[in-house]
Length: 146
Image 1 (spheres, one colour):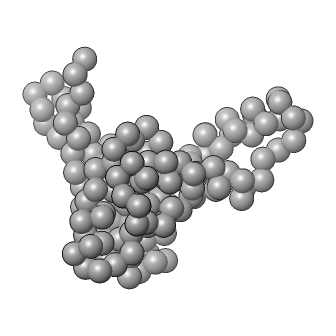
Image 2 (cartoon, rainbow, N blue to C red; image 1 turned 90 degrees about the vertical axis):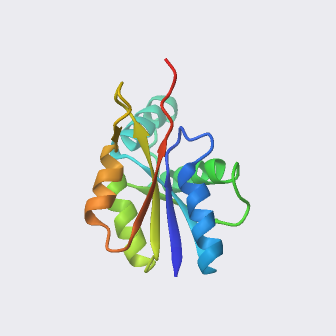
């Protein structure tokens, strides 16, 4: 079995990876760090490639790009993980991948967004919480100073 940690490209130090590593060590399971490149990001890459080279980008190349993003985020926190790159709707793809891997847990991050400090989860986190067949661990990031 595995622990799946979903990460964003903007994560400097991912709480999902930190929590995923804790769970992987506690349960002696593998940690899979997953980044899902959205369809809109895929289209942007396609457009850039067409403009620059006149060629489309192969989906496998896009998955490799997403995998490199997962590596970049995970390597700041741990050196014992498997990086995975996927393309599509992040919430759906994380849940699908976790199901395929028979994951014990999915770890995702959330954000504090309101001025009064009420924790509101992002749409990806909500999708995962609502649709996952396994337990979901969330860690809410501290409020960002403005």
